[in-house]
Length: 116
Image (cartoon, rainbow, N blue to C red):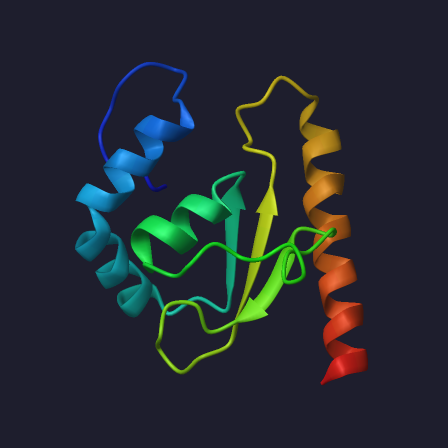
């Protein structure tokens, strides 16, 4: 979660971006501590990239139509898989959310196998 404090059941991107920039160091420490291989973002990959990692926005050429990225965005020297799916609190059925993330993950694994 990029927004580290409570609030209402809805958040706007501008609000998430502001919290992310404010809590940048805490979020980076979590990345170091957890050292995950896969990061799942709830439609917040752009905020994570720009506000937490202070990485420039991806150009249209670099964006993924399939919502996944294998990169070292956090500067750790470790290539991680970032999946940008819908936030689980959306109003779609849970099963549809599950299959969306599972499909993105499968596409990422296939692409990595071919490229890597």
